[in-house]
Image (cartoon, rainbow, N blue to C red; front, side, top):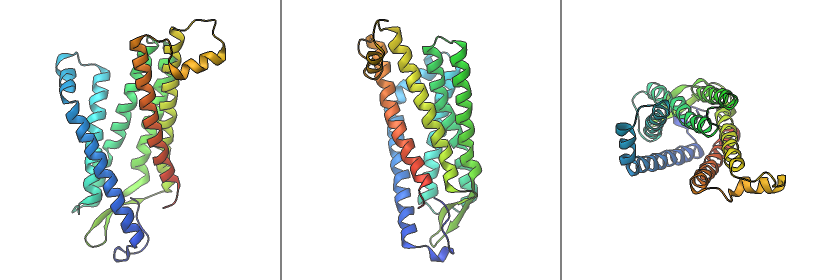
Amino acid sequence: MSQPSGTPEQLSPDFQKQLVIWAYVCAGSTAVFVWDILNNLRSEYSLLSRRRLSAATVGYFASRIATFVYVLGITFFTSYPLPDCAVAYTAFDAFFPIGVSGTASLFFFRVRAIFHRELLPTIIFGCLWLVVMASSITITVAAGGAIGVGDPTVCVVAVRVSAAFFGLSGIAITVYDTLVFFAISYRLVTNFQPEQRTPGEQIKVLFSGANLPAFSKSLFIDGQMYYMIAVVANIVTTVMDFVPS
């Protein structure tokens, strides 16, 4: 939540309402994430203890741990009167690029596996992953720290630049997720479709996944579900960054 105009004693009712809503959103996000961790605890323990450690495994756990620390920290930041808002925000915000980069790396490894480690897709999506990582760092750069306002004290972010600058990360992630989704879908569909199909039929199959083997179709549908959720969430977040509060 960016810094309001006026002194701490002059917090407007509208801004106070925004703070409350933001705190509820953060608390809800943390609750969902904790539920997801508990629901997958057994499989994650198996992944860590029974399989060889790989770059994908490191990326997965980096994503999970960093995201959990970030959402939990921001929940405390928005709902609890912390003694030093600036230090707390810097500590919590440092985990945002790690979580985003870790999550994006998983899709890089998936694309690389689908394309059988071909050089060109590896280079293209490797560069796109670097763009996502760099854009996520802009969140920490754009924020000039945090201050305590009001009584009781509420922590808010002191923004250095235009709030729209925060939307760059959301745009980069949305573009990256879109390209990953279409690249994987195209590869899966073209591997199992007859060449005599017309372009229109191929496009239709690209969105339906018809005639794919069971495993490939499961992977295809899983990608569609993630893409839908991720893109909707990123679009909403980006719009909120660009629309003045």
